[in-house]
Image (cartoon, rainbow over all chains, first blue to last red; front, side, top):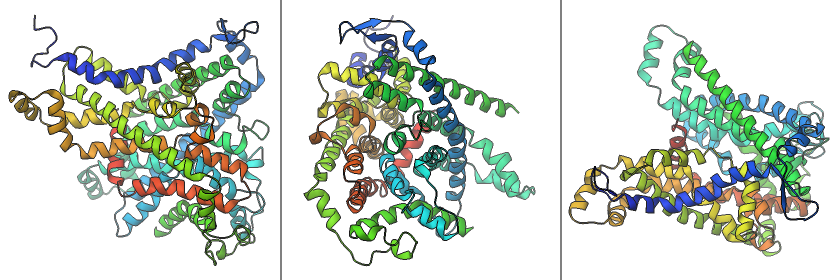
Length: 297
Length: 269
């Protein structure tokens, strides 16, 4: 039996715990505890008799939620959004990464341009595009008019609002995801690609058969993390459409915010958050499964 | 081929260019050239800096900038210390539960801030910190990714250096200060960048946790600008440009470190 309090090399373990303490306390209080509180909070509701005190109501919040047609509409909007935006952003990020990975003289200049949206925060991107997408005097409509396309309503149209948000979020976001994929591409050994070229494989084939499998890890990471981010997308709905027009952009996260901070129904708000988290976890699991199946084939 | 690159480049730059151009002209000129479109929409003929002056003098935008800078810089300093110490502990020491604790720490990175912001509000309320700088700063200090970065970095430093110092009787903090820290410039920069940008871009949490004007941070202030001063386009653009320029000025020269920082978290697997 070794000395208590010291590891094999004689280091005092209590110092390690001391060094860890501030970070662990912060993480426990501000990250882990809120998750538990969210689950618990979704199982209570505020007492009508004594305001401020809570009654345990079990799954009642959830039952009420599932009986509400607005919930189902919101779920549909969220799924619709994510089915489109996730593959789109990953594909575009990959395209950008391939472009950034080219070698020619002006590439550093172009790469700098690709990095510019990184400095733009999502709220600012929303504000800028809001003005540019203005139905009457917006820059985008003027440009469209130049080539003969009539002015579009964009954010005030029930059918176009959600997709306008997709465009804005993608404009701002792809540069960030591109970085991971570009780093992955840089790690593909040139010798392997050169050998394939000598064997007569065309560019597209080389990419599909050699490069793509070699960047599986960063690709999966980007897909999974981007999916989680997009399921929780909130800022454009808050700043640009307030969930409208006609609930067409009322994603679950916005509905959760509304329930909690506009209607004051924290139980419902947290129930929505828990449902959303479960949705993200399931989707991520499916993505992991799909990726490992592809690897086997 | 070059055409594609130009197209993408233009797509990324055009909105910002228009924003800068529009911020430098009098209000009535901003939309004069947009429909029908003429190239003058992008090139101001008369330069007018009054928008930039007004937002600071009349609209108190300077307050939002200084709030965000204060919160961001404090988070960077405090965060580097807290996360750095934790990374040091994970990298250099052996102790029971090390693997489990490190795993849990990494897991917190996966906890999306949007989902915990609502219950976090309850926690902060219980502390009585609603509408204080503490509410903005403290929850952002401990960061799983930054701990991971420090741990990976410190683990690469040869343990013989520390052993030699131990033989000379040096304490663990001395070793951290005299040996590990001087070698840590890259990780300090990437960790610092991540912490800074996290706070600079924060919107939902400051929106929920602070009410008063004095504490408003930059993203929330901009959203408010949009609502209240909607027709003062040039000022809205000016404020947005200031809010974008500051992180870009930090990000572009330190690109390499930023890339190292974010991709390290991506290869965690």
